[in-house]
Length: 102
View 1 (spheres, rainbow, N blue to C red):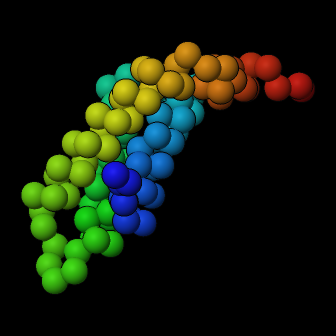
View 2: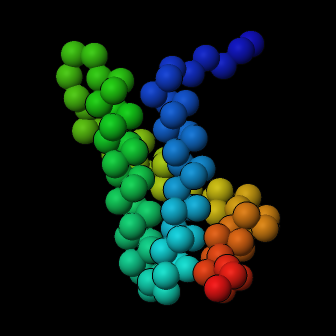
């Protein structure tokens, strides 16, 4: 049995996995963890809102937008803890200004 995802959901999943890299850039700029968390939540809300808006046929469903936001935020945190944190990609994003030639 194949899983068929529409284009909006596929883009939402991809954006959810990329959001932690944006948060790593804020961490590099020495922003507080609280601000980074709120920023991640705001990006998750934007992702959930636009995914629901792109998928809304007859009307916009706020319940679906909130569910998409929560799913995106959880996926972003899991992607950070389980995928990006263990790779040199996030470390290089954080250390980039320190290793750049002058």
